Length: 215
Image 1 (cartoon, rainbow, N blue to C red):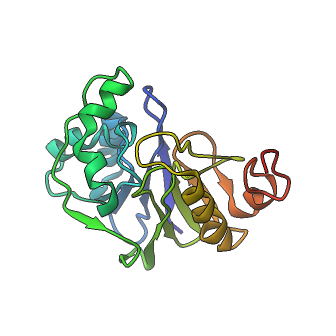
Image 2 (cartoon, rainbow, N blue to C red):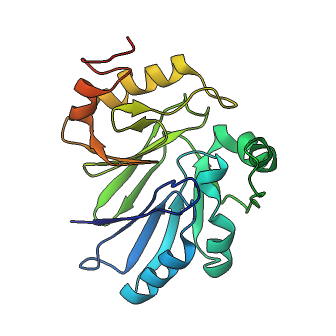
């Protein structure tokens, strides 16, 4: 069974998730690249892991701020992102200026993907679920019984929809008609904060759960 290790940078606390299984291979993948680079580098070297791919859930600066440093350290790592967040990514400087944050440099994205994308890893498939709402190109990644949800779905909350390309109606559809169609046992690894499950959110999510407080 794959191990999921969370790394949380100090700035904005956007979660990075490293996934690996040394019993199968020494290859590892990273979901989001928000920072914590030195901690991640040290862990990879200590465990003898080879970082192969980075999957970005969405192109907000706090989720891609570590890309340049990782690509400098591991230039062969391949980066995937939604084609619908390409414009957002190209305007990282504007995003940073809006938040009064130091500017984040872009790197070349190796492949822009959508929900037709599937990849084999550790004997399982990584499947893309397109979940617009937090941003137009927000993606969730389903791997075995793990969902890497970025800022679409949080513990009893949802991602904000008032940033450029965000849309409340779209995130409502993404969560109700896509994520809530998944099994209750699916573990949700969120972009910020603690993890949850689909079953928990179907009941307790403040916006779309059975016991919602904002409906």
